[in-house]
Image 1 (tube, one colour):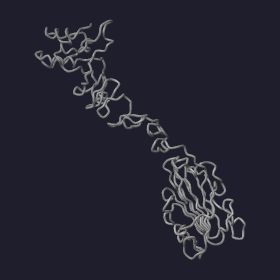
Image 2 (cartoon, rainbow, N blue to C red):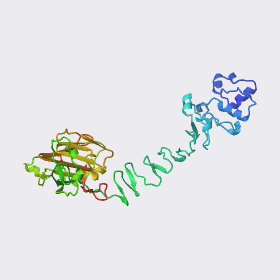
Image 3 (cartoon, rainbow, N blue to C red):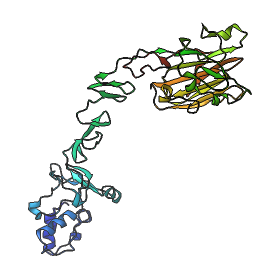
Image 4 (cartoon, rainbow, N blue to C red):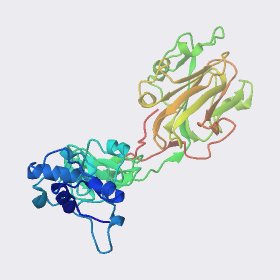
Length: 399
């Protein structure tokens, strides 16, 4: 037996209860008649809204479930099958009753939401058309990155409105997308690097002195395991010019003795002697990987020092170096942490010798422990470079 809500109301007025109907109908149309029939139209609407929901499958063919009509119910609240709390539903969307049921947990999940074009959105959010969502008071495409005012989504990153949108790993340079690791110059992207692999070196021939003087290298009296602390490189270099210059892809000199021929050669070039001498190496450390590189001075006689960054260009001293090694001292690896692969980091390596035997090796390992260069292993890539252009990210600097 099927009966409409209106018929149920007429039965009640004629002294019949809904329970007098057959059980299935009573269960299907149980209404809350706890309030009097003199309720206002709004109260009638609320009663209607509290009526048990009827599944669409319960209707006969070509029969549709009743829709909420405020002109009939007197403008009562929207039907309770709206999953959003009553005070959070309005978004200018036309409400059409849907035959849905929710359990208590679903109702709880929807708390703090409101209806916006048939969707629940956070209470207090800007009302946006379907397919859009509130982002700092502006409607943006649903799923797009939400950026603060004055910014916009660019490949999942927030960039200034009007800036060129570049893919991840690139940035805007005067309207052109360039790699982040590339340098942006005054008038556009900087010219491509013309660097060469290796380092430049300069050999300075000195003389024996007791304490460091311009052109003078102090005698190692003990011999001391900290001789480098008594050698002031800045004082030594005052007024000096290199005896010879060159480039190298190996970092180190074979062990030598004044009586041996190899004690009078530096990277294949002949010099008067390696006693009381200094070699400076300069260029850029150009790491392929981010992470911790290790630098280890080996077989040092007399001293090895190394600097990175601005200190490698100017102001380098025997107290502000990052790496040091000395005759008669343990070979200790030093760690340098690279923040970003592909950077060009100014680099300076010094070797100095007093009297007698001489030589050194400078071992560099990458974060994976792979050897980059040493005295025995030449550099095979561009992780140390020199000779870059003046407008490049690695402009030349002096010895």
